[in-house]
Length: 283
Image 1: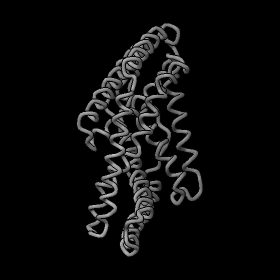
Image 2: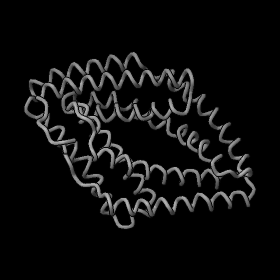
Image 3: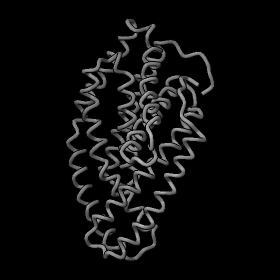
């Protein structure tokens, strides 16, 4: 985003309340789509929508109050978490046929069965989501946020700046760790931190009426690469745990996945060198 004057504090608050309402409406729409169709894309989009709503709630917390935000954020966070296994199964179901190895058929059949079971569980979870109660709580939070404008008129930009710095600091600390590229758990933490900073910057652009800039594009690149690495590790575990696979098939598939994993590790090293992530605010 090119550097320009920020909107007035009250305008920022109003834009944030609109964003919260729109994101909640989108989450409800996608919930219904998953209940009706249960397609891979809807499930992925619902999980993303839950993360975006959480990002907006975190940003609005100084005006709404941490306790009230926690009451909204917790069920949304649980939704994000519960959808994770279904998302992993869908990614594996899309990835494994691309290996063009007929011996993998027993595993793909098992994944289809697990997917049906998981989809049944997720439908019950979505049906039980207290949508009306959460809608009322969100409306109350939005009203509280708007009323807070008089008290926090001169500190809204401070909220944005503090949140931005907090999110970047987590990334900076992880990037300083030795052998980050080889450490799966640290890479996972970095991927989550980058995702949060990306959602913040996308939301900030929306509040200011601007298009996301080059930083968001760079964060997407990091996120995609780290996500691909994480997926290969998940696929590797699925193959290793697949008792129905003959040993020769398992070994053959593991060699392919390991080779792709090594290539992605090298790409990640190069990305950190060529496109380092540096602190920016409203840039």
